[in-house]
Image 1 (tube, rainbow, N blue to C red):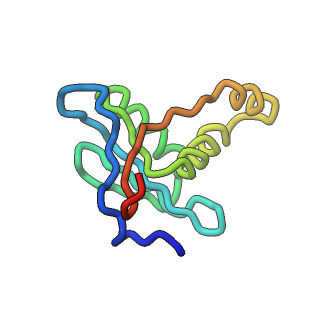
Image 2 (cartoon, rainbow, N blue to C red):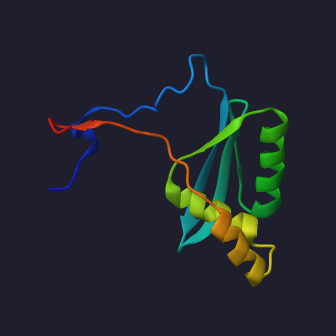
Image 3 (spheres, rainbow, N blue to C red):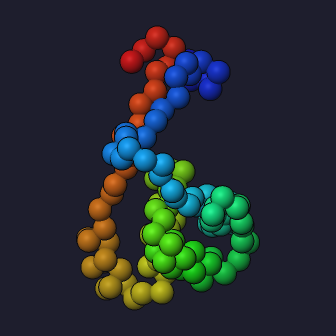
Length: 118
């Protein structure tokens, strides 16, 4: 039996590493046939989207976040795979292999209860 959203009785949460309001921007990536179709992002609580020029849009957004000291939250690890592909798209194959060896994964600790299961 597949899980259904209406059966989730408690939604997940980010592990509280801080005791103040967390200020962040978000990225939302949509794909078609495993290719980037739309790059959506929230900056200062305003949603924007782009249908092309993803490399420059992402880098401009990244620079803006760094300048404003805002973290970026993404919706899934799949999004992160596309971000890595986007970042590395301008490098040659040998450099890409070097950079991929240096990339680590950081994920929040999420918890939720499904029906009565922990």
